[in-house]
Image 1 (cartoon, rainbow, N blue to C red):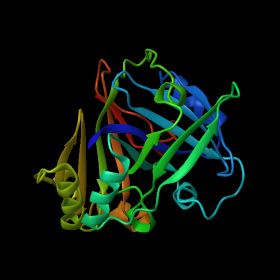
Image 2: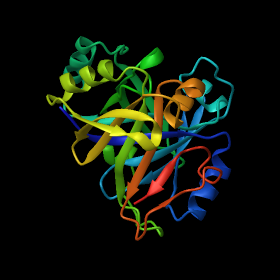
Image 3: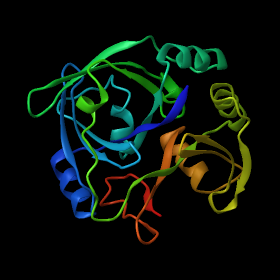
Length: 255
């Protein structure tokens, strides 16, 4: 069963600089460590709702990595992981619905304190990356992989909504209806020139938007392809969009 957002991935070119600017924005940021053999380092912004933002940077060129191209296109939100109670079962359902998912892969990260954290993940491939989720199952335990949340000066307590731009709404709606067992709510989004389907995954909301004409979603698809477009973070005392330059291309808003 898919139960909630585990984390959203934000690709940045310079991890140390991104840590500083996110801290300046009022987030508590914890260095996460290095992914041996993958070429990336990360830092985590952990929320009270058990979700987190993962800031990821490459410490060596990896043009074969699924996040390399979107980073070269401007970075920001590039992927998302969902929590699951049944990694293999949920992966099988998504595959049956038409999602291109790889086989389970062992992964690990070495934290700054030297502790090795291990998990198994199933990744969406090709054009399905960033539209379908990737999933993981703990090997060493969540407490080792994700530090305990600490208060954020800006008041954020969790992720509210993730918006994903897609070219074909019907296809994506079928994926999630099959995986979640609900049809999803259709809605219009004229301010972005799009129509959408809304799904709840535990406490979190996903909105998948397809363009109806000229507008921000069509423009995004033309430059970045189907991928995460924006996210809203909840708990802040006032609603405000964050500056794209300070979030390193991630379209984030506080609500």
